[in-house]
Image (cartoon, rainbow, N blue to C red; front, side, top):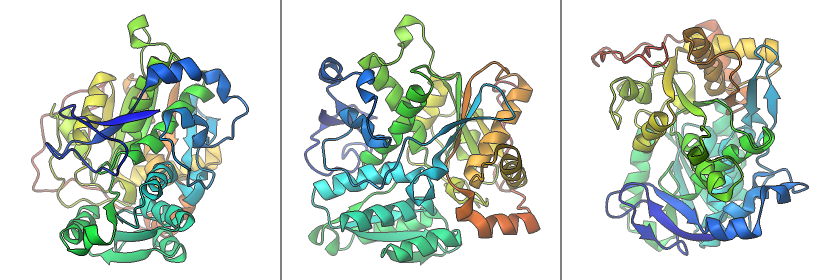
Length: 417
């Protein structure tokens, strides 16, 4: 029962019966808000039993609209064969091979609901493929702006889904610039265009929050001590934290008021593009644009996430941490997971193993702590990238012109850059 949209900066409310972008007052990210008290009276977690194993099983806490679904969500939570009490949430088994399917399913669902005709997105790869797929299913035009050096699978799948693809010489931030230019054109409003960039509309967060509901349900409605999440735009981190708030209000999990603790949220980034790690170690509430971003983990090559202020606040509230991984560490971790766990992980997901090892070594996590590591995509979509990485691992060096901050020790880890 969606009631309104709320700005995460100023708290202003906006109607939920029309398409919205960001807060017109301060450009804050808008969150969808529900009448949770009413939902609690009419729906319980027990009623989930027997429902379809997709993210839309949680439709009571999702917008009311006819879903554009390809079977996304309810991915397996696999117990690690190497580390007791560690689980790997394998999002690579989603449609289009990544967790982006969740956010774009919800986003395209609402775009069709509002009668939008042309959806534009800047993407490092996987979001582009997901938008292309769900737009095809919804009979809506998808216009993709992606860097020229994205993994070949992302480029090819967009073409096959019938999306209009523009390859940009630069990073995702440069792709976002192209969308911004398009928004200044006379045709933008006339032809029914809409920007579905990360956190520039409210519903990708809603799709991603279902990961939080699934973690709780699959662990018997108990939350783990930690969640390690690869952070580019950080929508999944935002979504899961929002899910925990909602589940507490619904009575599905124990509340913080009763002494229960939420998971320590861990943001892992590539050393060659680690704006969150840098800001966290400096004790800042926002990030600076990362210069000369370079990493083979395309989804982590986000020089300045729009939701930075929310990501850093979640790390602080959860007593979490921010950790970086070099490309060489990421490639080695991807190979290790494949050999030991039987999971062919995307580079972004493999970075979570790097982070867990560092946090275990520092004592931040103990062997008995339940920790969930998110593999956000299938390694099959990165064959060209991983092959190049095997031949010559990319050394993700920190940009020379950026001064190294004073390290702030977080659970024994002083984040490298």
